[in-house]
Image 1 (cartoon, helix red, strand yellow):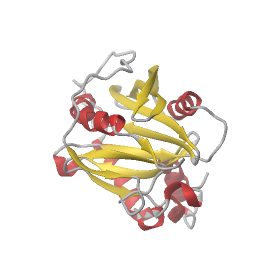
Image 2: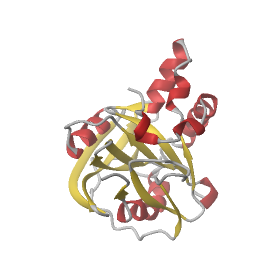
Image 3: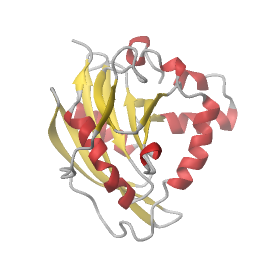
Length: 227
């Protein structure tokens, strides 16, 4: 799947293939679960109770760091950058497979990364977008989770996200190699330009929970940019 022209706006000015693959090789190592973080959990509540982070700006609108079918506020000091999925089209062989696996998950493609490192945390709030269609937010989110290796214990709920009704999921991922587990959260909404998924990961469960206020801020300020 590739981005439609109206879906991500100026995504071509975002991250390059080389930068993404560098982030993949370093980020995957950083996001391995902490042995003491969340072992033995079968799932996580889809209802979060974290505080809302201090606002640092907003993305999604024309001229912002990431032009998207939705707008939302990002936490103070977090840094957003658009992802150039089309920049992987010239890759071949194993490099192409690696890029495709990193940039595409189920029915959606990565469009933006909001990095927590400037705020002293390790992880990303990632935005994924898909092509317009009739699939509802729950089905999009189910396919997204199903495409994530090691995902289990998914718990779904209907949420009011800003002016949008969407579906939220809390689940855990387990590394078979490391036999370690950590929590994840994601939220899906549908727009006239296609579905949008906001996903919060993290190095481990402790880091994930420390970043939940940023996720809550994004969720509570989410609006569509299209009619």
